[in-house]
Amino acid sequence: MQDNQSLSKRGAVRALHYQVGVYAQAKLVRVLQGKVLDVAVDIRKDSATFGEHVVLELSAENKKQLWIPEGFAHGFFVLSSQAEVVYKASSYYKKESERSIKWNDKNLRINWGIKKPIISKRDSNASTLKEYIKNN
Image (cartoon, rainbow, N blue to C red; front, side, top):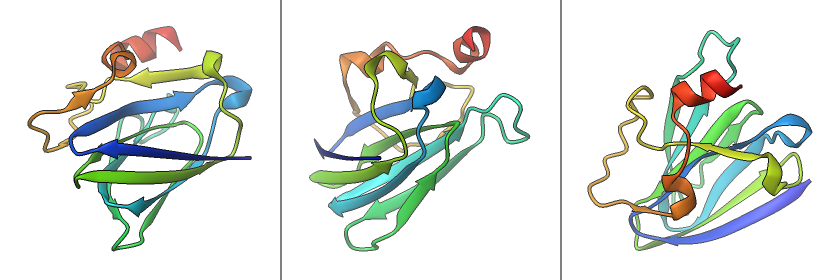
C-alpha cells in the first residue's frame, strides 16, 4: 500500500512503533545505505510468543530484509554514520492509529548495545509494555 523511507544518523533510535485497528501494518524492511540493528516485538496478546523479540542487523552490504507481520512493534538503532531505511507497509499511515512502546522497556529485555542514544520527543513518551497490556 505504502512505501516509507527515512534517513537517520548514528545513534538514532526509532522506537517500537505500530498501528492499531484497520490501519495495522505488516512491513518489509531493508536498508539502502548504512547499517541498523532492526527489532520486531510480538505484541499480539493471545500469542504464545507475546513480548518476545527478534533482532537482526540489516545493511546495504548484507542486503537482508525483515518481514514484520501485523501485531508486531518495530524499531531500529543506527549503527553506521547514517542509515537510509526503506519499508513497504501493508496499510496507509494514519497518525491517529499510531502507537509506540518504549525501546528500552526492561520487561522486553532487548540488548540494543546502545551507549548514547538519540531519541525523539515522541519516542521518549512511548508506553511501557505493561501500559500496553492494560490499555489494549
